[in-house]
Image (cartoon, rainbow, N blue to C red; front, side):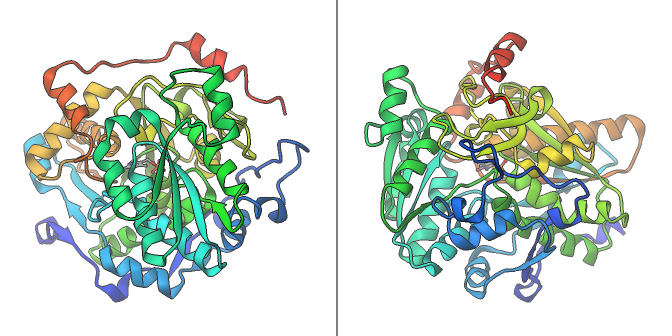
Amino acid sequence: MSDKIPYKIYLSENELPTSWYNVRADMKNKPAPLLNPGTGKPCTAEELSHVFCDELVKQELNDTDAYIPIPKEIREFYKMYRPAPLVRAYCLEKKLGTPAKIYYKFEGNNTSGSHKLNSAIAQAYYAKAQGLKGVTTETGAGQWGTALSMACSYFDLDCQVYMVKVSYEQKPFRREVIRTYGAKITPSPSDTTEVGRKILAEFPGTGGSLGCAISEAVEAATKQEGYRYVLGSVLNQVLLHQTVIGLETMTAMDKYGIKPDVIIGCAGGGSNLGGLISPFMGRKLRGEADYEFIAVEPASCPSLTRGSYVYDFCDTGHVCPLAKMYTLGSEFMPSPNHAGGLRYHGMSSILSQLYDDKLIEARSVEQTSVFAAAQEFARVEGILPAPESSHAIRVAIDEALKCKETGEEKTILFGLTGTGYFDMYAYKAFNDGTMSDYIPTDAEIAASLAKTPKI
Ligand SMILES: *Cc1c(COP(=O)(O)O)cnc(C)c1O
């Protein structure tokens, strides 16, 4: 049977999902609500609508509808770069000499180079439908800024991106892609916002962080008429949009009678992993099937494996609502790690709850072992993976090697979230042998966690 599975399983356009799947509808323990930091009470739709688009607020707060229809305009855009291929990694299996069957869902087939476009286009659509002038956001590694600038140019919306200063300086080409799509880009922290000026005064010369850039982008949105803030990960709405990944994968696998035993994804804010596993998790929650789910995070920013499950600020400037999540504390400053997209201090509330309910497991991996896996993968499968995605590759290879020892013929599925063409400094450090593995001490994490709000 396995010989008959093609290298790439593509779906046809009319097999694309017509609704997103909302896993919260099937969760017994719902993710905890966002809290207003002023009142300590759950944020109302009205409060959130000052920051986010109205329709996205509804999606954020919707814990009951399992399926949310994808508007036709978004489906039309998806058709330009989806369905994404599901690839059987025959060459990697052979190289590893494993009896395991390895599949990956490849999301790097668009200019942004990652899965981020799946949510960017949805968020831009709802902003346009509401008659807004534009949106503001932050970007760390740059993939989200690129995706959003593409989506905004498609819908003719103004786009203002606050880019973490170190990335802005280290990734000039990302910056130019973003500018090519017409977005305005500001290195963060900047002196263009109150919160940016405050952070600069407190930490002069800082290279910035996602938490800082979020604060600036939120302030910029609330101070301009006709603007809202959009975010590329962490939020429930983003996980929802990313379920196109899992829905397509499930349709493709069902078509060929393939059942994954282990499903693996890298976890920064949790959107690609949440999107990939949601439909499978739905089956598990409804008692229809069982799977093992593994979230992979960098050892330098280990929110699930070493953080606490508490209410925390989502940003450094404390302008956002509080979210209950596995967190390292909003002031946690991850060491310079090359997987910029995985450097956020917290984790999606949905994944945090699933992890707390022991429905998913988590592993942390060190940077050099991640790049070793990336190199091994690139040399046989051809694709040059993003550093973030390579965290999932690491654990997929580890699982496949375990099967080699035990002789088990497990089916392993992982999310290959993007390509690494803009991360060549990272590859250079690995190739030169100058890459290091920084792991925060317990004392550092405890100090940062001590500053989480007392709820
Ligand atoms: C942003 C990003 C991630 C991490 O974000 P999640 O929200 O955890 O998915 C992973 N891979 C790539 C390529 C990214 O751009």
